[in-house]
Every structure is written in C-alpha cells, then in structure tokens.
Length: 111
Length: 142
Image (cartoon, rainbow over all chains, first blue to last red; front, side):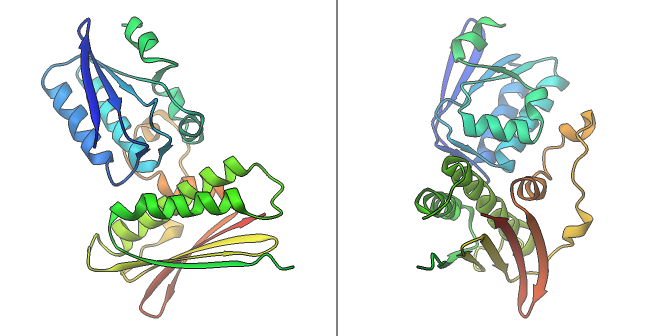
C-alpha cells in the first residue's frame, strides 16, 4: 500500500495514496498504525483525500488504530474525506467516534 | 425493448480482484438504461456491496483458500437488481449475525460491519446452501 509519511510539529501525517482502502490493503494500514503507536507516537493524522472507496475492512483498520491510540493516550485524527467515504462513516456511525477535519492542515492545527 | 443484463464472472478466491469486481458494479450503475434514481449513489452502493459480498466469500466461506474460486452473477431486470456470490465452502449462519445497535462498545468493534452494510444498502440479503457450496443473494428494487 502506498502511504506518504511526513512529520510536522511532532505530528505524523499519513497520506493514503490509494484509490481504495479495502480488504486487500487495510491490514497494511492497521499494522503501520500499530507500529507508530507502539513506537510512542502520540499525534497521528490519516489523510484520506485520495481515497475514493472504503469498505468494512478499511473502516476496521482505522477503528483498530483509534483503539490503539486511545489505549496509549494518543490521538488519531482523520482528514480529507470524499463524500462516498464520508457516507460509509455515517452509515456505520463511525463519524461519531473520530475527529474528522476537512483538510490535513486543519487536522494538524488541532493538536 | 427489454433491458436485461446478465453478467457472470469467475475470479480466484483472492482479495486482489476486489477492485475489478467493484468497478464492474460501478460501471453498470453508471450505464444502466432507464434508471431514474441517483446513479452515483447506486454506483457506490454496488461497489461496496460487491466488495463486501466477495470478501465474505473469500474469508468466511472459502476459508481464504487461494485455489478456490468465487463466482459472481449480476442480473438486472426492469425492476430489480440481483447479485449472487457463489462460494465452495462450509458456509455460515447469516441469521445469527445481528445488526449492530451502535452503543459505544459495538461502535469500536474492529470487524463485523460487512453484513450490516449490505443489509443497509440493499433490500434483501439471503444466504443459502446449494449443491457444492452456498450462495449469497442480494436484491435491490430499481
């Protein structure tokens, strides 16, 4: 899975460079988030600007990251959701769980 | 003129083919003649539902055996769309899978959203035994 990783002001920015976040690649994202939190990172943004499609496995990987973060007093925030992705968060009520920002800069400024 | 479409696809039991199958569903929705609803919505719904149904067959029915196959049939008539996903496995009890009630604990489950998503986006979801395996049948009125 193609993820562009940057750091700014002690925040890890992960831009998902994939059109789909589904059962084929979701596990890689889950592992990557797990590694970040295990390494002690506390502020992480996953930017979904380029993701046009998400399925239940993609949602599950983000939930796994969220739980991992919460257990370590860390934060996982999301940004850049396209409308189809947003509608999947609403259908599964996960928009109530995550801090969701319109742009990566807004997410960055929120820490 | 009858607008009947009947597509059958057979792919290996592997998640690398999810995007291919999802895209076929999407393209079908965008090109469907005489459909009066929101095409973009239908396209996304078919993409999601075909993906979830195929993952279900790969992981739960065919037990992630890459040598097995998933058969998919998409039938579109004037009033109804039928998606059938055939597997060659032991199957599972669809009726035992309850819809979530979205309390705080269930919201944070990492799995178990696939069946709910299919039920929420389509009109009916049925899973039944057939000779040599099972079929997941998903219907939506058009």
